[in-house]
Length: 288
Image (cartoon, rainbow, N blue to C red; front, side):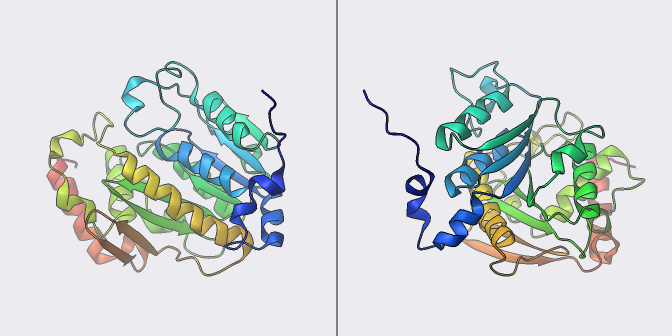
């Protein structure tokens, strides 16, 4: 069988119409950083690849297991035990063999975060919900380096989106993590990420959310939604094509409930309503 040679213009020609030819050529030179190659990270990477983004920084230190089958696009019987980074690297290159990809198999940390972000046009957060320290580090460095940083979290069957843009509210100003215990940081992240709380309306078994054990329920629906929402905003940021709602505002899309809400926490974590919800959440989880 004769394989058709890869042709960038032909491969991504069906994007033209929603993108101009010049914009598509521009995406070929763009650099996207994705930390985490699991639930949302894998779909983010493949979505960026099919949009024709040409360069990547990808980080992950984990391997696929059967427990990942419900939501992670790289997880299947053939990839059990394989590094997530290796699998997603190959999947991206199967779409675009010419893609330039720098890999960070130890994940993102203080030693490599600057190299990870060098030349990056947009950072798409895909870290595990509980990877608070790594998340704080990357968002802080993005803010210092004037790199747009976005996160779209899968919540139930929808997604909550936040953007932290150069010169606007920072991640720390919004969430107020400094000085808080680890479990309180989880709560702050959750409450700030999804102040509308739409997904709570259909959580049928709350016992599956356990902060102490760092586990919670998930669906492929939420991951797929997250990739679409994040990609739409990333395109606007990379091409300078439209406003992006940024913190302290965000969006929450939930097709299960047929709802979309624009959220707003004025002054971030210092907001009295946020503080009240935090006190209630700490009491509910028995956190001092």
